[in-house]
Amino acid sequence: MTNSARATDLLFESDGAIDVAVETNGKGFMGFLVDLPGAFVRGEREAEMLSKVVPEAQSYLRWLGAPHADLSGGRVVERHSCGLMVEDADGEVLLKADRSRVTGEKFQHLAEIARHSGETFVRLYHSSELKDWVDASRVRKTFYGDTPKTIQEIFDHVNGAQYYYLSRTGLPFDRREKDFVKTRRFCLERIGDLFRTNGNSVVYEVDGESWTLLKLLRRFIWHDRIHGKAITRILSRQVRLGLIGRYEDAFRFGIEG
Image (cartoon, rainbow, N blue to C red; front, side, top):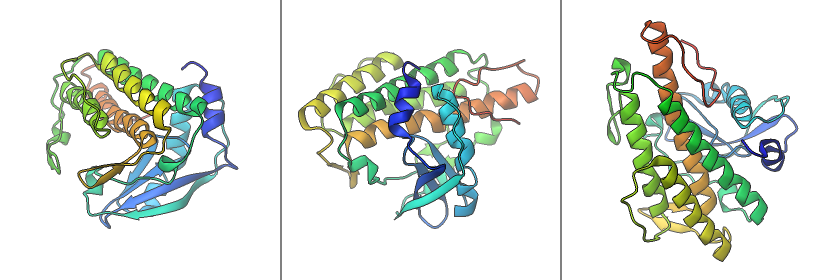
């Protein structure tokens, strides 16, 4: 990523402890790494979730090509309760960081990471050979219906969600574009226009959920990562089963088995 080290200098200023905002419904826990927008961890219990913080942060920094950081662990700085199915990765939290005032420079760096994230997701998809192979372990019901069970279904889901995120701002737009990268760039351009007009000052209330422009950028990256991990796990299973020889770990997750 261009200027990745500079971007992480702006985003990640830490004594080695990683600030984590926790969202839970009592059945599952989702942790958001505050200074690394889009980075997240999950677990049935809070302790399990927090045990994954350092590997997730290291993966995120590797993905950005940032210098190695000595990290000591997760530190819970926010707790939020919700009635959604957090165990299925549903959530609605508006972090304190999502409400913050930021400079145009920092906003642009975040937008650049969101662009890079989308391009990484597309590269992961195109590098996959068996896009329609059904992963039987993913056949189940969630709050939004059947879990996508092939790489193609996951890709189509993430692509379609891009317009959903942009719609949270209330902006009118043409939904005919199907190309993933062009759609991501279009969404980021429109979000950038809003930032240049109002900064990050507006809170959009849509269907009972609060959004800001910073939350939108975070959710774009988060959605790429959560489904990028799903694709990477499918590819790892395909290797284990001897269906493919190797795969590209585009997000640098380091998933094995």
